[in-house]
Each structure stands twice: as structure tokens, then as C-alpha cells.
Length: 111
Image (cartoon, rainbow, N blue to C red; front, side):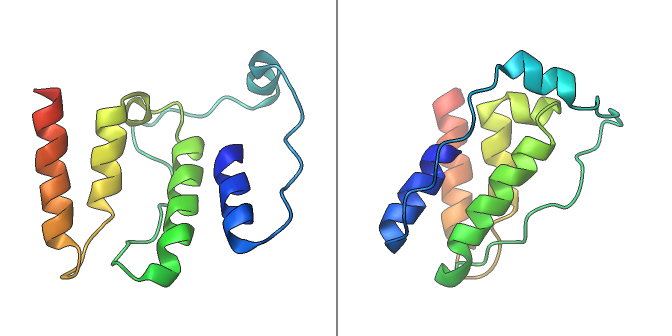
């Protein structure tokens, strides 16, 4: 996640942000309240991406936050399922064919 912020900052000409504090993952997990597992993904879900180039970075940021919010869900444990989830959020006449091709390509890679 931090590397995405560094890349975005350098591309936009912003100063590179300071790295996050070095905290052991166990300490982070112990400090967080356990999530109630209802079997459903928690909201808010990312906005649907329709190929508007002005919202592509926002979509990626929202999707990674959504993944973090739902990190205990079984969908997030699998790169295949995470990819399929992301592709379900890419809709519209300008991207439907592309998304369909990506679904097919991912399916072919895992079979």
C-alpha cells in the first residue's frame, strides 16, 4: 500500500510521504477489535469504475481500502477471488468487453 502512495506522489510531483511506523503485525492485530464475521463483505464498497480516467486512482484507492476493511473475509484470501471481485466493479459500455476478456484470461490462468 505504501509503495502505491510513493508511486502516486512521484507521478504527481508531490513530496514522498514518510513511511508508516514499524509495528509488528501481531501488535496491530491485537490492538484491533475482532470483526464480526457475518459472511458478508463490509461496506462501503468502492464506486463502480466506468473508464473515466479522472476516477481511476480513486477507484484503486477505494478498492484497496475495501480489501483492507474485509481482510478477514475468505474472498480476500484468494488472489483469484479478489481479482474477480475487482472485475465485478468495472462496468459500462466502454469497459464491458475489456472486463469480459480479463475474466476469461484469469480463468484460463487458473485452469
